[in-house]
Every structure is written in C-alpha cells, then in structure tokens.
Image (cartoon, rainbow, N blue to C red; front, side, top):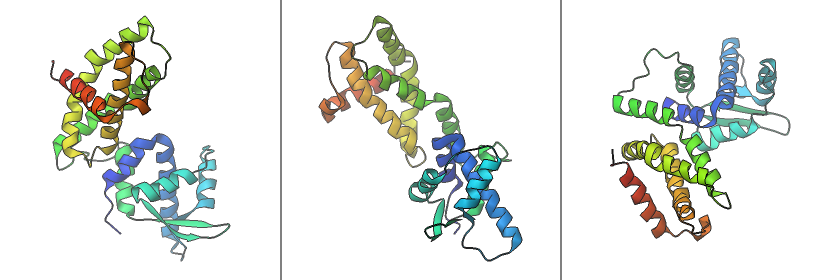
Length: 229
C-alpha cells in the first residue's frame, strides 16, 4: 500500500468522466464508513453496498465495468474476496484516492505539482478537448465523399486548430508517462488525417490500406504545420 500516485487516479477520472468519479467517490465513502465501525470486513467496500448507495444518489448505473478498469488498468483497487453472490475490493492506496477525488472536485489547497511545467501542460491538454477533435476527424474519415463544407472544415482544422495541438503534442511527448492518453489520441488523429488528406485530394483509402511509411509522412507534414506560427 502507499505506492499509488494520485496522478494515476486522476488519469482514470479524466479519461472516464463523471461516471468514474461517482463510482469512485461512493466506493470511498463506503470505505470511510466501514473504517469507522471497526468491524472486521472482507475488504474496503463490496458490490452490493456500492450499487445500493449509487441508487440512493439517483445514479442507476452498474459499476462492474469501471471497477474492472480501476483494477486492471490503473491498479486503484484490488479484489479481496469473490463468490457467487459477493465481491469485495480494497483500495491499494486510500490516501492517493482521497487526494485525487479532492483535486478533481477542485477542493485541493494546492494543485500545483513539483513541476509547474507539467501542471500547465495538464491544464492545456484539458482545454484542447482532443476527444472532440478526434471524433470530428473520425466522422469525416467515415464519409463516402466530402462536401465543399467538409473541405472547408478540414482546412480550418489543419491550419487553425491542429497546429496548436501539434505544439502541445511536442511538449507532452517529453513527459509521455504523464500524458499517455493524450499522446495516443493525437497519434491516432494523425493516422486518420493521413486518410482524410488523401480523400480531400480525391484518393480513396481505408485505415487497413495505410502503410506506416505513408502514416509517418503525413504525421511529419502535420507536425510542420505547428511551426508555421
């Protein structure tokens, strides 16, 4: 215990949003209540109580998938008991979870990390909204043909919005451990852009047809756009 960083917990919250926050916050509240009783339990919280507390808050959601993600991908919780009708987990580091929940809610007294450059980059990444950009580009890629409006939108993306993303991407690559999610999404964005640029030029291509050399070429051309301004 004690080896979990709150930044890992925050990554899970930023990646999976309010559902993840609600599930983790409620699980942590159950852990706190159980700690007060002093009773010997099978873990910090159990599935049945978590479901019950979520319903009390008007949140009708099965947290099973998120709990698997918290355990498998982030190491925030681990299973301590499992049977046909019960399942219990414990937090690998309750203090890290508490700090992350408070920061996510904006309650932290000091959200500036030891490296203010990384903190600033995190703020910039949050504002960029890479998920929205990736969704838009993916939607354009999936179209059979591009309209004149689509082509104007592509030009706007390439010359007005993406150069800023690229500049930020260059900086976050230096701290890849901290920005794995953002960087992987930007790399996927470049892959989609490789297809989109060819469609713009009237060349039909699918993701499966895209070789790594073609991907790198368009990747580099998009990166160069970031140096224009």
